[in-house]
Picture 1 (cartoon, rainbow, N blue to C red):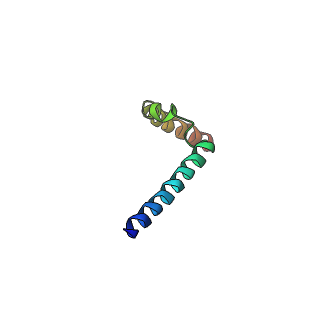
Picture 2 (picture 1 turned 135 degrees about the vertical axis):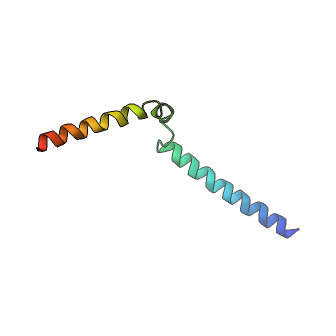
Length: 63
């Protein structure tokens, strides 16, 4: 029976540790940007198409 009390107390300590880590992450602003990751995949192709144009223009400037 004493093992159950030990396991419950250890699990409560671990849960409090995770809760403190979560509160710290929220206060530092880790979860602030919710919009950009959901839209990033929509504009990914446009960014890839623009990069070769930029590389060509920089190569032309060097020549």
